Amino acid sequence: VLVMLCAVLLAYVLYVQLFCSRKIALFAAVCVLLAPVVPYLSGKLLAEISSLLFVLAAMILVMSANKAVSAKGVLLAISSGLFLAMAGLARLDSLFGPIGFFTALAIMPPAGYKRSELYRNILIVLAVFIMVYLSVLKAAGVRFEAIYDYFLAFVGAGQKSVLMSLMGIATFGGVVYILAFTGLFSKQSRMVRFFLLWFAISILPALLITWNYMVEPRYLIQSLLPLCALGALGIDNIMNYLSAKSRNIAVASFIFVIAATGLNYLLVRLKPYELDRPAMLGAIAAIKESEPNASILVPWSYTDYNFLNLVLPDTKIFNVNSHVESSLDKAVETEWRARFQGWYGEQYIAEQEKVNELLKSG
Image (cartoon, rainbow, N blue to C red; front, side, top):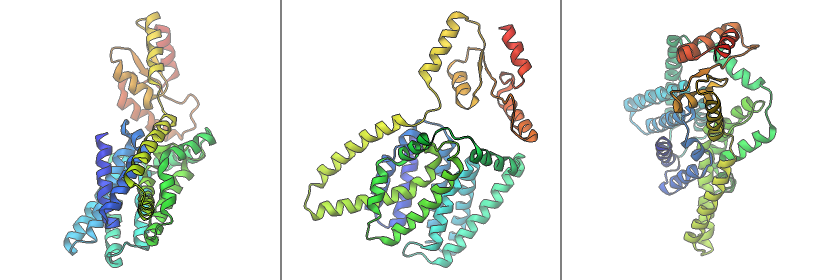
């Protein structure tokens, strides 16, 4: 929760730089809080959250570089590149957001920014990012082909459910979509085009990569910032309309916040969850009741094993997450198993023979 609140505060700083208006920046920060994906991620420890923080830091620094004197501007741009590298190392697809942002910045910069300085700083950021990112990958012994294979697996994966993908898209933004649509009619047409371009470049690659698998709301997190910026323009439009009609803005705002909060509660409940905690703990309790010394074999390490290993430290729990008939490249599979063995030690069992031995021994 605290990390996401930090992200909201950083988003506000970025929006002040972009809008040059604290009022509209505040509206944008409110939209970030209203997006259902934010409370959804606030209770999780996922790379999307840290990568969002790093991306925000990179964007704020490059915007500051464009307003700074030459030497300081270069230093800020270098710092921006370092944060961008950390974002990419945390989660590579988090770079879709910055790519959209830098593209929009280069094509239609906000008022008061010189194109020559923008281009220079963007090139510095990209150069620092490439050098740091590739250096870290090489030092860690990570093959870029393995990363490529990972994304390719998503693109070619069997589709779980079109309905779930559509629901994932809908529950990502919720009511902010409506506000963003209203924002399209803002008089700040240049800013509308800026945020539309940023949003399109941020969200389309994520949709193309994950559509054949399933579009989870968290996969779209890097398109949250431009979406909320458009939502802020929508709120500004609505406020101006109510003010012109001499309507009670305070009452309308209160009703809207209550309605949006209620809608978000429903949307967060509809989101896909990896783990059914009560059902899993109930199943383990039933097993231990019939056989107190039973060994628990968990076939999914991503959430199930790590959760059970944390909350039930005295229970014999083994991670058997592996492929019986692996479709992975042999080198990738060997590397993958070695990494799991290093993480989980004796609690990780990949071979079918060892699983059978454990079952026989009870």
